[in-house]
Image 1: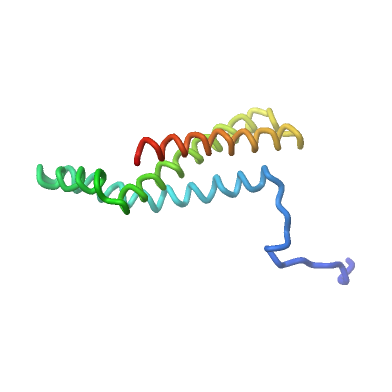
Image 2 (image 1 turned 90 degrees about the horizontal axis):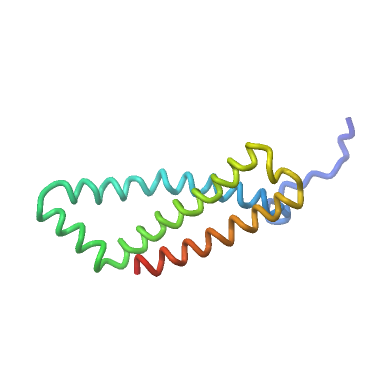
Length: 125
């Protein structure tokens, strides 16, 4: 074994291909959804507590900038995770596994996700 081979441990200089980036983002949005579940469970609990709690939750989502931002973040993570999950399912069935078709599928995933996230932003705000 050649012990003099170069080793690059600087993550800033490693160039990842686009399909790898979309896969990493899919995992990251999964973690974000797990964390976002706490906020959504809080809002659900507040709304089911009483009529006053429901009105407070409605007020929070209608007029609260921070609540809308968190809600948009949750919906954005959900949309990206959904579309990337569909891409992964298609790949599990043996399609888009080649280099060029994988790049096209990654680009399509990003484009569809960005459009859906922007539309969700318009809907939420």
